[in-house]
Length: 234
Image (cartoon, rainbow, N blue to C red):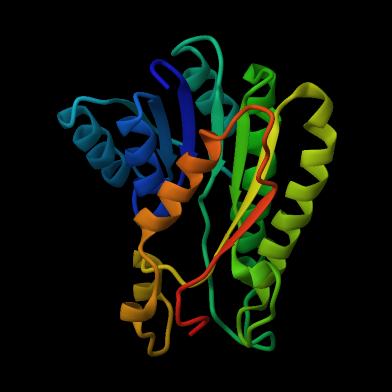
């Protein structure tokens, strides 16, 4: 993967961070973004300390102008984009009757609209053999009480992924839905309730799965993969 350009959203922590590390270990140049600079700068610095190459850029993926600017900067690395990982996401856990419209809209904007915008602009720099990974969630296939906004956004993302895959088949661009179950990321610190994080998967497990799928033969496409903790859902 020497010199290949990999774009990862929400790369300041959790799954996105580990995906950036895994691709950098393979020799890719990783362009990473998040809404704040501190986290992605730390990731960029650590990748470089390990001998890899990275470019950290602040970007709110729900704002079209920022997405276009980020993609243009990432594409200047080599003139193209080999991998796009739509990973950024937010979650608000609240009953429907108490959920603020602003939080509903933010969830859809980041988890679904953000993936659409990143894909829209990245496609102009992707060619045959490129690969798009959308980090979905088991919440795209099952409903959970008080997770209505998150489930709706991830179900929408899965539908978008399935449609996009069919749209891009003729161009030789692969599209994979990564569907993880509970994964031990900093997100759980912000979610009310008691969660046994010792039963969850590690972000590194998801990152390795993404890289392994990308390294499959060009004639092979893993369309969708569900990854769950050995003990099942929490």
